[in-house]
Amino acid sequence: MSDLLALDFMRQALIAAVLVGLAAPLVGAFLVQRRMSLIGDGIGHVALAGVAVGILTGSMPVFTALIAAVAAAVGVELIRATGRTSGDIALAVMFYGGIALGVVLISKSTASSSNLTGYLFGAILTTSRTDIVVFAILAVVVVGVTWVLRHRFFAVANDEEYARAVGLPVMGYNIALSVLTAVTVVVSMRVVGLLLITALMIIPNATAQLVSRSFRSSLAWASLIGLASSVSGVIASFYAETPSGGTIVLLAIGTFLVVSIVSGLVTRARRAAHDRAERHEHEHGPVCGHQAIPHGGHVDYLHDGHRHAPHADHYDEHDAQAHPAPQDTQEVSR
Amino acid sequence: MRVNAPPLISLHSASFGYAERRVVDGVTLSQGPGEVIALLGPNGSGKTTLVKGLLGLSEHLGGEVALFGTPLEQFHDKPRIGYVPQRHSLSASVRATVREIVEIGRLPLRPWWRPANATDSAVVDEALDAVGLRDREREDVAALSGGQQRRVLIARALAAQPDVLVMDEPTAGVDIANQRILAQVLATLAARGTSMLIVTHELAALRDVVTRIVCMDGGHVDFDGSPADYQLGHRGHEPGGGHHHGSPGSVGRSDGLAAIVTDTLPSREAQS
Ligand SMILES: [Zn+2]
Ligand SMILES: [Zn+2]
Ligand SMILES: [Zn+2]
Ligand SMILES: [Zn+2]
Image 1 (cartoon, protein in one colour):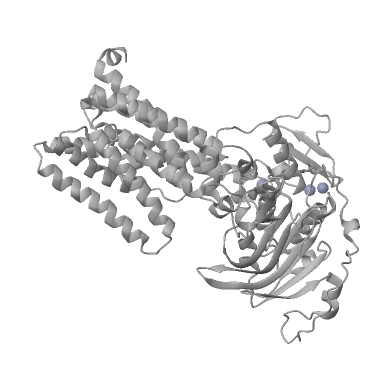
Image 2: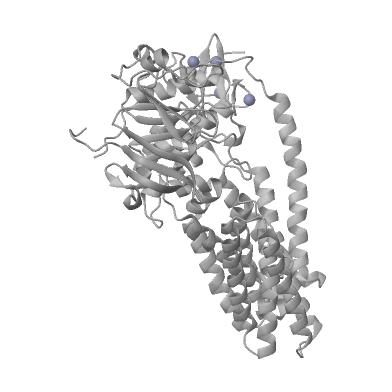
């Protein structure tokens, strides 16, 4: 590891991996919530046209890609806001028009095909220092803005009609999220690649959904898993001499598969051990008359000699084994 | 409550609709503080469009509409109207706890850069208590029953400390046992002086809560009066029933309300 860090380009690559690994799943969480998981992919297609224009005109492909991607992101929201059924077709024209234009333009330039592959699938080890600095600044901005606005993005994605009724600027937040997606796509294009970045935005979130019980904790888990996949992917790609993007995404998918198998087993075991109170029409509450016993992070109610704990939409029989022994003295033996 | 306070909601020959199509036409109505109005009517009669018009979700096409004395177009203090939309299920695309959904209700009250503080969290506690879901605050909303999810949405609206609750079909699709619990929650709110406008077609569940009934048909109001008069004169829209209208008269608060309200809930913070 220390020999890795001694390499200048490797230090850069790892910094980029950390930032992309954090930013992509954080922004992706709200795309998953809005059921727009694949929108980043479409924006990535359009960004390729921007890359091509940059290469052809000899300007920095990062900036031309950023302009193209942000324009596409605003376009996506404007098209969605019209609410027309033809919206899907408009998006398809925009996305595939973007990638087609990109491929055609790059073929007219002197850039080699390996250069194109670098943008499509990631080539962190060949990225210039200036690019890394630009990416780093953008990634920090994306993470910061998303973090500050996370409650509002959550509210708007959760119930757009309610958000509008209480006066939240729904369109503004939707465009902001879309632009953050575009910036994330461009920031990640050298690490993961335009065709693979959506995987890093979505898959860590899919994994996080399996292990979290709240949106808050799922955000934390997704960022952690994204970060781990991204950093370990860059290191693995150095030793295995594989492209960084594909390696990162394979690691993220591997994590997802392992976690889903384990969580499936855990859920099954829990369900089997789970003792549900039979037919329970009565609703316990602070004033229902049954004694409440708060302990171990939940409340039990003493009900005809049983201890009932609220769970999902029903009540459970208190499980003396699953809960640590409470501090109180009313422990009922079962 | 100030004397001579303007009505919470006042409509004068108001029309609402979508894309120039009038769904609600020429409705005159006003709701005073403390009133609990049931807005009845068959499907397509315009009840939901009317309510959405007040929230800026359908278009205001004519007539005068004022909220708390301010004309609708100039009204920007939207969190004063607590909206409880009709939802059969809460989105399950990602995990969200009951508390996280209720916390959304606080957002419109603070600028985007300010994080939640102790007051926000205390008000959320209070809203969860009011609907009896504090002990399930960490559950995934998607795991709750339909009736419990409806109560989550009521708590979300209460978290904004609104001056009037506007509910769209709160009891639709909820089983009888849960309807009873919902009615109890609404009765408790009513006893605390919460004003409510409840769109519903199941008056039975809410009979003891409402103080006034407004009935719509074909985009017009065809009855406005006390529950007693409604019983007497308005055979409503039951099949085969004639359309006799009792004279809209004095408002008689139904008995039985006091009997239902036994909970001692924390008092709602006074709004000035
Ligand atoms: Zn009880
Ligand atoms: Zn019980
Ligand atoms: Zn259970
Ligand atoms: Zn317990």
